[in-house]
Length: 122
Image 1 (cartoon, rainbow, N blue to C red):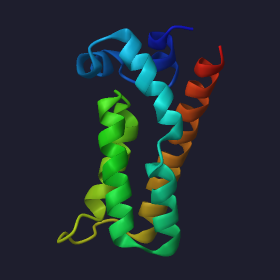
Image 2: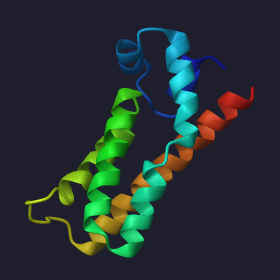
Image 3: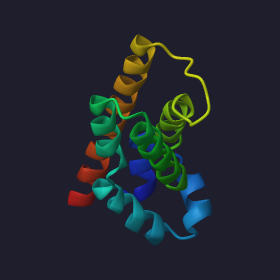
């Protein structure tokens, strides 16, 4: 599997990642590092603890990292969550809608991680 094929399998945007990282080998290098990226775990821990600041900070970090790697859907969902908890803004989602959004993020994150794991093992 090529790195471009990986991106196709995880609904990523390879061309966007290549524009930012400039070389295929850099895309390969940094997509592998995403396996150790910690913002998702921090987001879930902050959500469980009811830590609104932690939810904002970790989802905002996840949005940025995902965007830089061309993981546009992951970035968009993380961005919606970050916007929901942005300091000074009033929440618009009720708890059920937020929970559904987190489940959507969780499913896509798991799919992305599994795809990268398989890619890295080849």
